[in-house]
Length: 210
Picture: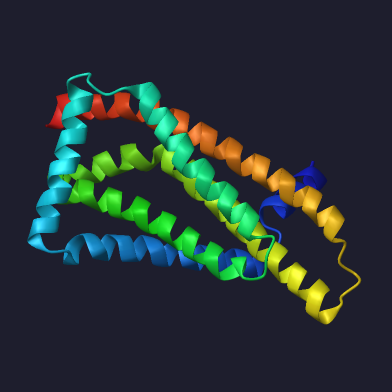
């Protein structure tokens, strides 16, 4: 049992240093997104408020197309995940992927902060509804693919420039392919939750608090 647990953790957390680094980048994105929602101009704040209220209004009036929301969520995240995976197979992709992970964390944080901007303290509850559990699955998917893309780029660097023959890139590629499948699965779960479960919970929130 312990061996299975350790092997499972090793799959998700292969390198403590890189894992902490990607977590730091995600944390930086989350903090930046929250700060940005505060420092934007009044006209931009009004635009954000308008978009959030329109989104809530669509849910409340049953005018939102859940299937369309699902398609959009899958389309956006699958493109990001696949791009991170592809760029991970290049040395220059190391910088690009760090930026992608940062931007995704920034976007999620900005959206959550926007709920607080519109609904104040009630927005905290709305933020929890938005991020649990769909946002957690999304962040986990980007954490895993981010860590492994950095590892792949670093291993590629060692093979090409340091000529490290101890690294079996063929074997690592198979593992890297598995990571892509795991990340896409997490994105699929997240998209289903955000499209159907989250929208239903938001509707309950509207009836109770708005």
